[in-house]
Image 1 (cartoon, rainbow, N blue to C red):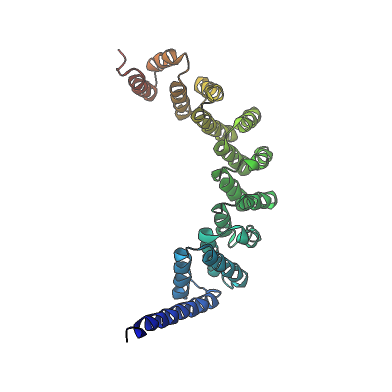
Image 2 (image 1 turned 90 degrees about the vertical axis):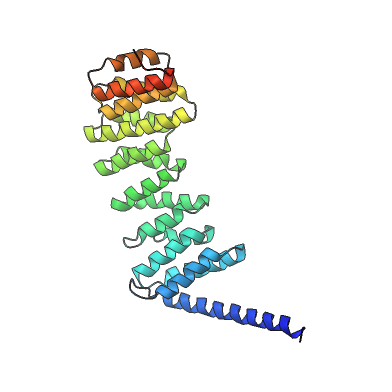
Amino acid sequence: MKKTIPYLWIGLSLFASASAQENLNQAFQAIAKLQSDQNFASAQQIEAAVTDAKSRETKQRLEDRLIRALSQAETREASIFVCRQLRTIGSERSIGALERRLLDPNIGHAARLALASNDCAEAHAALRRALTKASGEHELALMQTLAKASDHQSIPLMLARLTEGNPSVAQAAARALGHLAGKQAVKALQAKRTSANNALKTSIDAALLHCAEAALANNNLGTAQAVYHRIHTDQQQPLHFRLAALQGLVKSRVPQTSRLLAKALQSKDSALRRQAIQWTINATGAAPT
C-alpha cells in the first residue's frame, strides 16, 4: 500500500497536467473569435498561462502560440488581446508579426505598445521603420513611443519632422527631441526656433527646457546654463517658462545666482517674487531681508 500512494499521486499529477493542457488548447482555439461580451474564460486561461510562465521553454512555446493566434484572429478584440499578451511575454520571435500590424488602423496601437515593451534592439528598429511610412495619428504615436523609449537612433527621424509643414507633426517632433535630449537635439531645436511660428516656438522652448534638465542631471552645466539663461532673460517667454529657467540656473549654481535672485525679488510679478524668496531660503538657509 505504501508503494501505491506515490504512484497514485504521480498518476493524478499527470492527469491534471494533461487536462490543463487540453483546456489551454481549447482556449487558443476559441480566442480567434473573441468578442467584448464573450469568450472571457478562454482569455483568462491564456492570460493566466502567460503570467505564470517561468521557464524560457514555456515562454517560447506560449509566444509561438500567440504569434499563430495573432495571424488567425478574426476580431479586433482577439488581435488586441494577443498583442497585450505579447507585451508581457514577447521576445525577438514576435517582432515581425507585430511590425506588420503597426500601421493597422484597428490594432496598430496595441502592436506599438507590445514592441515598446520588448527589450530587443530589433523591436525599436521595427518602430523606426514604421515611422518612416506612418502618417496621421500613427506617426505622432510612434514618435512619442520612441522618445519615451529613449531611442536615440530615432533622432534623425525626429529632426526631419521638425521642419514638417504639418504643425502637429512638427510640434510632436519638438516634444520627442526634448525627451531624447542631447547636444544634437539642442542644436537642431535652437536652429529651427528662428523660423518657427509662435505655437512651434512654445513647443521648442518646452523641449529645450527638457534638454537643459537632462544636461544638468548629466553635469553638462554649459549646455544647461546656456538654455536656461536664454529663456529666463527673454521677456516674451511665458512666466512659467521663465520661472523654470531661473530655477534651473539656481540649481546649476551659475556665478550670477545671487544677482539673478536679487533681481527676481524686486520683480513686479508676485509669483516670481514668491519663488525667488523660496529659492533664496533653499540656497542660503535664511529668508531675504
